[in-house]
Image (cartoon, rainbow, N blue to C red; front, side, top):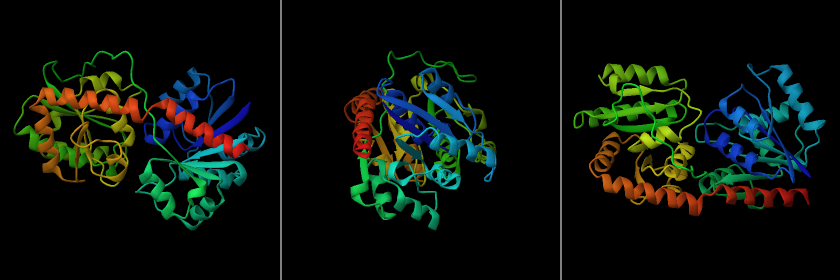
Length: 357
């Protein structure tokens, strides 16, 4: 039996946390002992992993130089003697280095550096020491190559997303009548996610429709600014902030379309979730998202921060129920054919096996 230790900064909603959760749950228990070290706090996804038999240790790091979490991480990585240590994100990689527990001969890396994260000399030194990197798509692989990771150490796999079965009933949303229509945005409300710009686009739509609402599921440092802007332009009563949601299936069934208005990257998880739920997506035309959205078939791609284009494409969907249905069905088929969890797990197992050998 092989032992794998996953290390991640947080299991809040996000692409890295979603892929880790799917991979950890999908690895066969008779072949792998899977443990997850979470640098941050308890979240609903922590509970979900534990309910599936995955060992999760929450380290509750609150400060950069909080000694106890680093000591616990060192114990997990050294005394536990995992065959493979898989770090998810730059913060996890740095934590392993600072704890003195990372071993280059068995260290893997995923989701290391996003568009919004600057690399340091320490990061580049650590990248040269990892045994291999697993990139979720060609756009992420290109970022690794720009940082000096050679193709021999790089494995490109498609991200996975389960298809919800059976389809659940739509959620009842406070303040929104059953006959009214809903646009949904998912994920952390941070500046680079573009939700303030999305509210601006929604203001354009509000002049044409009096039965459309925008629902944002998530939280983040930019939420106060987005809420304040919604009040200033007079649409706050039709822009709803749900906060973090442990379960998204019923909310997505209530959506007529899903917005992914990222400005500089991110949004892959939200896009995959929407397509798996048979919902058309309007996403920013960014490299990671363009790999997922089939333009004109499963949704639309618009230039980042193009509020008029976002509103225009949304009007086309709102005015054509058949187009929404067709795009939603095409999105679900694309998830089944190109982004299955089984394929994700099998690809990672093959790479792990090469490392162990």
